Amino acid sequence: MSRLDEIEARASAATPGPWSIRTNEKNCLIISSRQTQGWVCVGDPDAAPEAQEDAEFIANAPTDLTDITNTLRAITKIHKRIQYGMEASVKHGWVPEFVCEHCATPDGGGVPWPCETAAALEKLEKS
Image (cartoon, rainbow, N blue to C red):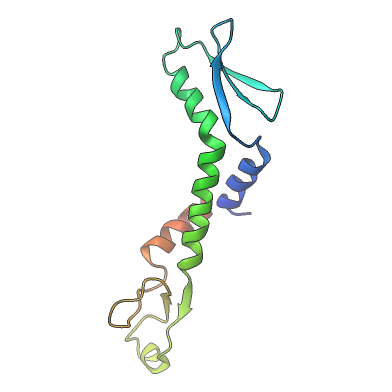
């Protein structure tokens, strides 16, 4: 399973948003969802000023992660490795054997595989 698959699995296993933030009678920041009866106390905003930011981060994580993983999947789909069609040129080393389908140059040439985008995505997949 790739890193992106793992992130998607955790996001899909969590309670979907929207999540809300409120303060209870004990001054505890509560993160909850209308879809479940559960809640999480993040902390006392008076004792820990960063508790509000933590709560915002946690409450928005399911939606944010879904948006990010969907975007990364879309980028992955357009940056595909293809074999360059001029076999003689490849044989003589004039052009790379594999290029990025999306990153073709205006003159019809190819950007060697992996392009910068594909390399960054591969790094994420292997981390």
